[in-house]
Length: 255
Image (cartoon, rainbow, N blue to C red; front, top):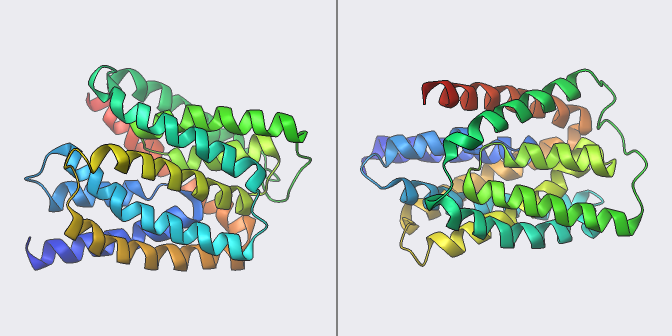
């Protein structure tokens, strides 16, 4: 790999770590950079290397949030557990479920999420009333099932969907929702790697170098989110939702 390509990948990993730590959507930056820098590699290798870089950034962001924010473990851990199992199932289903069927639905959901957040200025600014503990665990397991499978199979916007789900169905503010989303994202990344690594679809050297940059970006992003609060996370969330709509919309109408 040439030096300019490596520098591009490291800068992309840094930016992706920052964005992902705040509001999800880091893959919008990191995956296209990997496609460019690893143009001679199989798509599976691109995605496997992306997961290796991402898991360290996600893990480091989750660690910082856990130290500074009251992280809702009672819902984050059940969601992470079911997400791990179904993320692996989603990755394994790539061969028989066409992505073209999924893109229009994802596009519609992203638009709905963005509109809902925009028309409710108080949405996610402060914690609301949470559902009963048993009901919370059931909802958390269901979110892990649905979004875990989605992340393993398709992926774009998983972090943003997780944040929206934690705000909408658990009454969390955007900051605590982002912290919970990192725990679940760590589990889905680990499940994907459990599929990609044995199959030989990870470039360890490139992924490890990008992981360092991703961790730096994640630490900066999580620190800024903690300092500036839910209002900052909300606006970054809206920006990333808009970017995801453009990306998924372009892919949908080009196919």
